[in-house]
Image 1 (tube, rainbow, N blue to C red):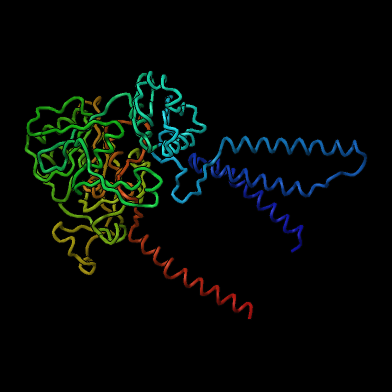
Image 2 (cartoon, helix red, strand yellow):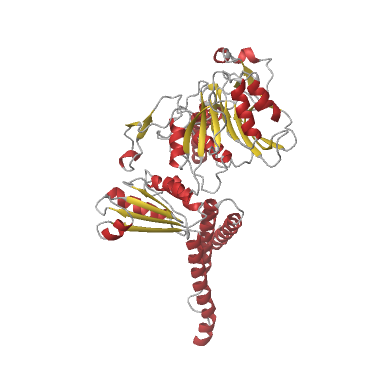
Length: 533
């Protein structure tokens, strides 16, 4: 192949690549993906122009004036192309971080809040110029705040502006002051930019949402303690990023991680003893019953039934051992077409690690609760049977098992083998549902919201950090409380990051790494030997 042909092929590839990247960049794939595609498209277009430019002669034929007239449009076109490319790259710039620990990348909690800003936010950071961690926070916030007109960020050396710091109430180094409308929050000793993201959520909140947790039936809720116990694990990132190696030490069945996540975004939590309550407090934005064990009395079931009938918001996370018979099921589940068996869903296709009773859900329908979710894990979940909802009630299945799943008794689930399930009926089982609308025979103007899930363990300390379980738990409560005015961010799990794969993903990874990769290496080696012999 001659040099001119290769040059033409390269030019064609660059042009087609630039056109495809530009078209995909405007296809609505999300801000980050669009910026990356447009950045690549601009780079390919510049390379194509460079390839064309090197073909131009240094000087055209004819007189000097004719050469000047011929070169002038080329110079103008080149200047216009460079100017347009720089404008395009500035408007669609992409942040690249090649450090091993990602130390130059702002945390997702901060970037998500800034990207979803709808109202102006002022952030002033009074830092210590001799503190390397404070300098890193300043640089990361500056990186995250680029090209965001609603965020006004100032980084001020406290030693140089003590008067301004005193006027704002700042008394210590590394203090972040966040202001939105007439609300102000001070966060002291900030050396982790993720804390600024959570503080921004709190200052942007115009009203305080309160979640009332039902107790008295074996639920694991306890009021948020005044302090928690943390341990530290030495990691590569932990040496460079403050708090990266901190691990929260809690009982696996408790809800401390969920309560911490709610507290970080500005929610308040309260205990609700339904056995002694005459009504649900009006300041409860949502009521949550997580993991009941014993049965509800008739008056308690009637209390919750009257609450949702009057337009309440209720979260029910039930377990296979939860007692739902009687008034509870009659007043809260059956009126909207729901029921549940005291069974456990076994999914041999999509499950967590090697435990088939820990169902992994990788796909979801479009819904405000599921729009940010990746993989979630539902350990030992009971099925939620769904019938046709009554008129005026909309129902959506948020999560379901695969078509290969089947049901087993909670007592026999760990001992059942695949051989014993040959003739067992298999079908997809709903694991979590969301309903809203007007309760049957209730006032049409009072719209309720209800979320029912077949396990409470995904919200517990043990499973809250895994993949998107924490985001699912928060998203359910935020949707129930109609908290859609503030940005949505991932909660801090205070646990070392892990790679979580389903059984099929583990199998595919094993096949690629242990079978296909060695075989392909051997085949390419044989092919090369055969060609050179």
